[in-house]
Image (cartoon, rainbow, N blue to C red; front, side, top):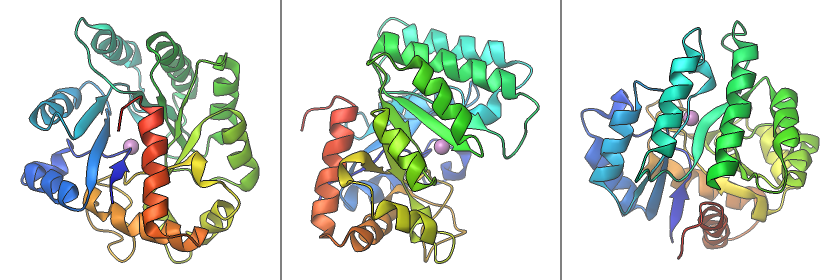
Length: 261
Ligand code: NI
C-alpha cells in the first residue's frame, strides 16, 4: 500500500531532534511521498534542506502562509517569488497560501492580495496551489473562482466545510485534503457526514504535521506515518477497503502534482 502525505511540515523545528527518523518511519509505513508546504522566509532553508536529504521522498512547495502575512508581507512575497522563479528551481506546488481569519484579521486585505498573487504564480508555473482556509471559505473561493481560467488546480487543505462548499471545490476543479480531523470523535462527525457524499476522486490525504494528530494520538506532535490512521478512518466512512482508498487518493495526488507512477 502506497500513501502520499500531501501536506506535512516535517522541516518545522518540532522535528529538529529526530527529523530523519520521522521521515524513515513514514516511508516504512508506505508513505512514499511527502509534500512539504513552506510557511515563510524563515522556514524555506530548512524545507529545501529536507528535500535535498530525501530527494525521492520529499517534495518542496513554495509560498507564504496567510498567518505570516503581516506588515512586511511584500518582502515575504518577494522571497517566495525569487525562489519560485529562480533558475533551476524545483518546487512542486505554490503554497501554502490562503486566508486565515481565525487568528488575526488585521491583515485581511494583504492576505487577499497575497492569495491572488500566489494564484497568478501557480498559473504561470503550471503548479497546483495549496490553500489554507480558516473561517474564510467564501473569500477564498471567490478569489479562486475569479482566478480560474482553466489553468488553476490545487487543494483546499484540511477541508472542513459543508457539502455545499465541497461541491463548490469540485466545480472549481480542486481537490480536498483530508487529515486528522476526520478521526476526531465529536468534532469530526460533520466532516464524516460530508465525505459520505463526496467522491473519492476529489480527495487526497494529508497530516499537516506537526499539527492535527489523528485519534488516538490527538494533541501529540503529529507525524506523517500516522496518516495510516486517516486512511483507515476514511475507508470506514466510505465503506471501502483501505487499499482502495489508498490507491485512489495516491493516484489523485500523483495526477495533481504531475508525477509518474
Ligand atoms: Ni499547513
